[in-house]
Amino acid sequence: MTKSAPSSGPTKGASVPLLAPNDGLPPVIETPEALAAAVEAFAAGTGPVAVDAERASGYRYSHRAYLVQLRRAGSGTALIDPIRCPDLSELDAALADTEWVLHAATQDLPCLAELGFRPRALFDTELAGRLMSFPKVGLGALVEELLGFTLEKGHSAVDWSTRPLPEPWLIYAALDVELLVELRDSLAEGLDQAGKRDWAAEEFAALVQHQPRESRPDPWRRTSGIHRIRNRRELAYVRALWSARDNTARRRDLSPGRVLSDQAIIAAASAKPADRSQLAALGPYDNRTARRDLDLWWSAVQHARSLPDSELPDNTTPYDGPPPARAWADRDPSAAARLSSCRTALHELAEAHNLPVENLLAPDSVRRLTWDPPAEPTPEAVAEALRARGAREWQIGLTATALAEVLVTHQPGRSGDDSSPEES
Image (cartoon, rainbow, N blue to C red; front, side, top):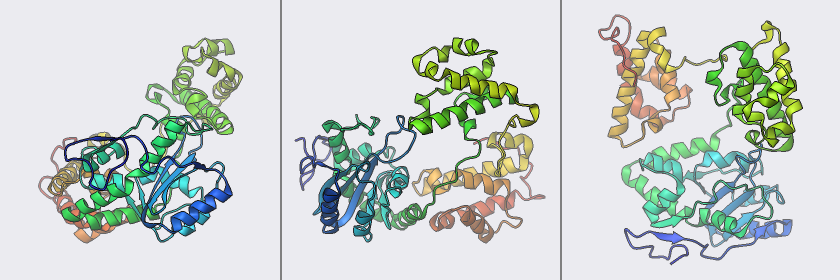
């Protein structure tokens, strides 16, 4: 058997390869006429719609979608080329009252929104799997565990900006939505049985309402290997080279790593070459890709060399949150003790409710709460602090009282406040 699930499904314990769409591979939609026909077909379908998108991560600078896949009962499967059909607002209107089913929705929602395609209600199968505490929550793992079919994942990292798209890639893409609604139904049943359906509903609603985060300040500080940089002058080299690379990558719509590697940026910052030939002699620049733009990289190096000290970047970026937890014991032992005790309480709660602790409460919320707790840490005050940091009501209901009890024990003058914390 090599096609999608028959109505009875595979034998329990068996694993059936899913190698071809059950309805055959549909043609890629590339024209307004074909898109209009798909809109009509999906408007006439029933039940949730499975949605997926393929990007060219690692190949292109942009995070745009290069293929959009949909499947709905009564409608079949559609593969849409968003380069040829960049406006999906009519499809959006046709599915306005329809629940979307996605896997790892946060990855696809931004690029779908660029096409005018946004859910009003959704079910995220990856997030549902996390709430059910499955050890593996990838699409393939969940389909195999719950439905008994194995998905071929060999094309997950290909360059989806390629045109025309090869047929094996299109088959892979179609299969990603083939059983997504069936997976949703199985997970929904499990959530109901575990008493977690309302929790999932809050999580899914938060995804629909989610606004993209503002870009981090000083994104160049995330350059791999920057921990080896020793001073502010070297940081200026990293910043200048990173900026030159980013501008070039954006202009060419190429992944930055395909323009210049992080290793090359760090090598130049560490060596501080005195002339163009010294830069060219560095190992990471001894290749055609780096040499193609050597004048550009040398110009960035010259800029960093010539900066006055007053314009050098600070050793650390400004941040409105607490310091890294590893530094708490030295900077504020009381806060470190609170954090350790709160983490212990949350681990116990997560285990009791069969949840990953990071889904019980976001680690950043825990750090911010324990670094700067309410003056009077009542359950109500803790609940309000968590709510202000984006915690869902089900999370607050499970954690606020326990965290308040911990914070009270660590107030000044209480026994135990001077204990030496252990990093958890």
